[in-house]
Picture (cartoon, rainbow, N blue to C red):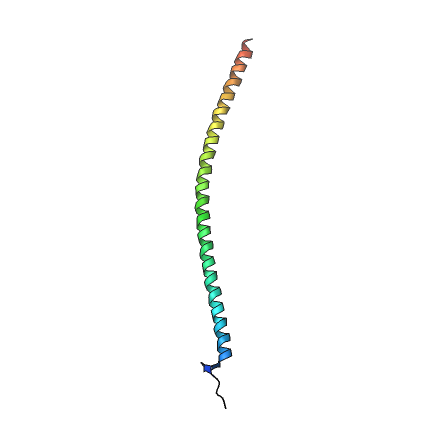
Length: 89
């Protein structure tokens, strides 16, 4: 009678199947951890870019608002000059 080769109480085929399953699960887990780390790095970079762009946009908005105020003052000054001119006639 032949004795079957066993590892930890499992036949060779069962042991290889179990080993393959565990190896597959571990490799998937490692791959997922790497992807999660990449996504976290991307999120961090996006947050930093958003803060930078928010600051840039605020600065641009202030410049546009100041330009608009200056243009509005110029228009009001011209309208007042026209009104003064028309009242004198």
